[in-house]
Image 1 (cartoon, helix red, strand yellow):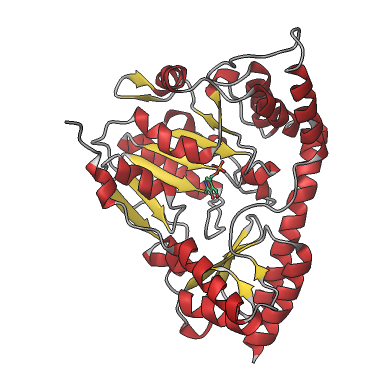
Image 2: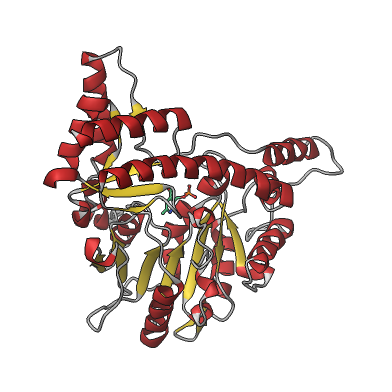
Length: 395
Ligand code: PLP
């Protein structure tokens, strides 16, 4: 008789977004006339840029004629897209070969699938608070998980010490939910730690395009030594509005070996077995992101989100509230005022000013007493929400 994967019994139910939606529903039943200022979820609100839309249309037309039709695509990604991404890294002074870039359907898929490369006995170290998929994917695989808490004392950027244990290390920078970004010096410490301990860093760079401070690293491969200890997982979801279109990429250097085995070669074997590649049409749309026109247009959109972040950060500065993020990330992670709990603060904002955010507690223990604002909403709503927040908390 077949047996289930009993590790699934160890998954904790996530009530975060369910609880939020229930609270909103109950509020609107009582106050159907009220407009809500939604700054809770991390989905984009702006459409795909013109360069991408044009490329998608052209790719659809290609599929209509025998001469330009594409069937199965190469499992690891189309050459034209792998090369465009390689060039994009080169523009940021990171030298890669195109076959170190693997095209994916998004970062979430990769964060789970990539664990195929490691023995079940390898432990995972997860910086927290964190994107929930890291923990859940490792629980499903039955891995030993070490939690690496962070807090106000280290600006939500935890560093390794002599007691840190881990085989697989999850780092996310700019971070969701805290918006905190590791400096080059901090990442160098992590890279040295990983090389010394024979660990592999899974570096989630889903929000790298939001970095504006030129001293901060967009890629872990800007750090010397990273090519022997790191995998970078990227996404076009927030960078270019692909949350519903689905496209990402993963970089596995050819110099990354573990226990005498080469992770780049293993991933080629994995992809050629477990996928038949990403759709031609979507990859064509993705390639348009890396053209000069595409880069300009996606950054025009990112600027709109970043302006939302500026409006909210200025409100918090005026109120003297401590927060991380906002400048180089689309999230703002604030300390709840007057010692309020995260859910208490959620209820307070909903009832008093109809502003919705996300209680930090939903991202793990060290999120208690913190609150996340996403800046992917409309500029009009964000401005009004910031004014309302100032008026409420100045009272
Ligand atoms: N990594 C982080 C840190 C995220 O916040 C998200 C989405 O919110 C993802 C990965 C997933 O990205 P994708 O849409 O490419 O699956």
